[in-house]
Image 1: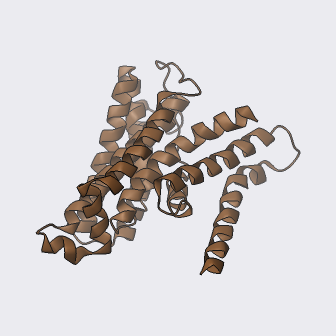
Image 2: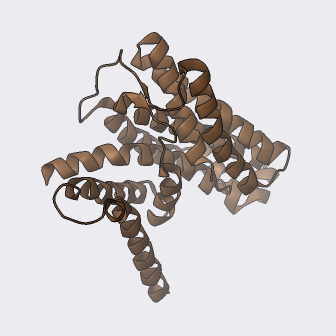
Image 3: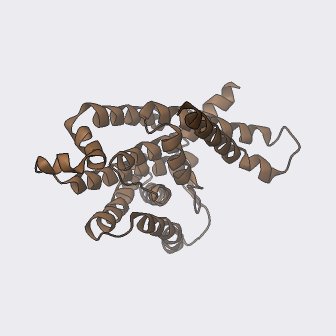
Length: 275
């Protein structure tokens, strides 16, 4: 059981980063459905930089930069060009999925797995895990204990109050997108650097699960942590039972998603009854 818990902590780490970043855009009144694409771009950028330099630091920096740039384009499309944020977000996800494969073929000569041979494997409890916890705590401070956080949340709750102070709500929404890109860059770099390889579509739905984590966690940092850990436990359990019980592999791989769906339904029923 201890091994399952350790595995769960590792699995929840990219979810925690993505969900924490998505929380900023959510509280700013703009749902960011591009978390999946931002994670994927971050993972590829980190892998490419680490492959060429052999440096974890370069990989992390590149992962953040790649995701930040893409999130800036998304923010510009949604806020400056007034594109539909959902369509723009879907476009980012589709773009990231195809573009990373093209770049992989161009730079590495393969559309398959790219192994980062120059990097040593990270320990089970690696710095990323603690960084994820620190990032979530910092998000709580920024959102609920600073003027910037009050104004960012006001951009969704009371735009007119912001405008009466001579402030522009879209400025805070743009900043929220950038924070989301920063967080996904960190989460994406964890995916490839922790694995020691880049795999096409390595994000594997984690950006979508991060959106579920935001709502399952009640749009609160502590709730995000609990929801991410619950999914991590379900995923770790599914990995553990693959060699233990005789059931179809597809069903085992679906366990985390079935579990999350069941929890979501339970929370929804509980919330309705409370009303």
